[in-house]
Image (cartoon, rainbow, N blue to C red; front, top):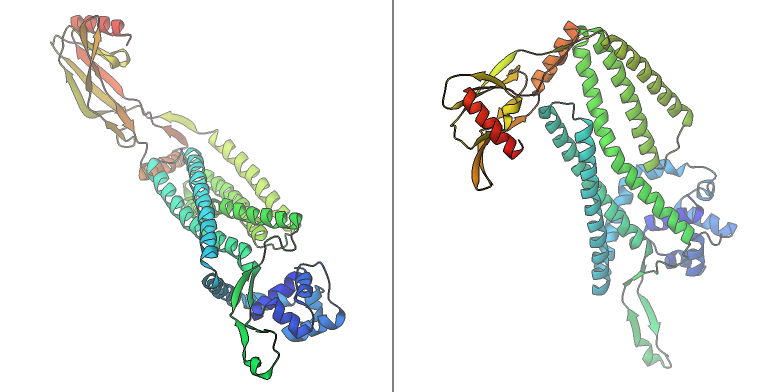
Length: 453
């Protein structure tokens, strides 16, 4: 922090204006303004007077040591509370026109933050849904819901902080309060001395271009925006870090199921180290704290090495696993009886096993592979009317919805795989068996061909 910034901070902490400080030091208000903007530097006797006035050492004031930082951290709550009171007082002293202007500006920034929130939320949702598509739907939905709730809450806090920060930069930092002045109007006689004009206390918002430095202003803006962006990025990283710790504890619980669980635990530790590295770097950047490159380089290299070791061991172990499909057919208890007519067409006939029987209708049976683990919701068939050369064809079809393994089934499948050293996978296809006569089969094939089914 420069001398001018320290002087302005001390003056505002004591609640005095530039004019009042200038009167105490027997200088002009313009001189104090130049000191705070670092365009001029006070003489030695003025620096000593400032140190006595604010109970501040000269070394701390001119930046030779940072002993006052601890004191500032202790009084952090008082500082922000003081800013809050000053902000409310400032707004109350504004004219009606100034209040409208201030509210419109803050409303505009709020709309921008809402638009940013919607855009980032959509992007993050796509990223997380695609990245965790391998997780069972039940677990993934809870995870996305938890992540969305935490993201919304933290974003709300950051958005409020951003609006307050903008209000401080745009208005409070340019806030000056004029003390009551007594102005004598050409007093000629003693009787006229009672005729004075008292100017009431009022607020002055200095021009934002006062002592304007474009490069310094751009630096502040980009620094603040960078901190906000890093804060938004750090939110999902913190949540992922918590989930990784939970996953590590979970793997420790089942470490006895197989050596491959240990390799997975090592990989999770690697991910935890990397997530911690990103979180601490984000924290240091946001709060402007010094970064120890050696420490973070060690953490990064440890994470990379551990990831390589665990990944190699995992691939070596899983290469010995036998890929085992689940082939036991289970009846879905879903049978469709289709009445037969000369114009009937069945879309799924080409993918079905045909059993010829002497019957006038068509019976369709549906099966899945391991109904206990694969959750398939069969839907009822639909009939649709099509007109082709004046002939109406009745189309029979079906739909099914694959939900995937439940959370419990997914965990059981993983544990069973590690115990048996087999990679189980479950088909989500529906197996269909159709019972009909040969004559009806030929008619349906002909109708399917005419409709291009």
